[in-house]
Image (tube, rainbow, N blue to C red; front, side, top):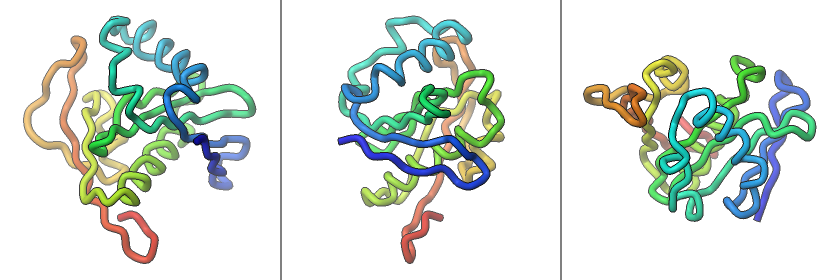
Length: 158
């Protein structure tokens, strides 16, 4: 079932919708295709996997246009964070990330992990993620495992 969240006052006109892949695919797929396949050169085969069907997806809309997406896997890993070029550096990715972290915490996760592209590692660091281990390649792009501890106290995610 899709649900909508409102954006912080500093991001007027942006709304987040969470739901299943079958509900959000028509909007999430073009964003991922633009970012991962066309911009970054990832293969079609690697982009679409069986995890989409079992993950919670989140799409950010600016007006009626889908501009960003991310997913939360059943084991509370975050992945497939993508923002269209014109909307980068406006806080939209942070909205999606914090939303997915909050959902993971609400599901009882004590930690959330992700594979961050090294080029945007500082973005995740800014959101409380800590790099672990050596860098590695995924689709010929350097990544690093990052982890964030979460605790729910009085409804707040830390």
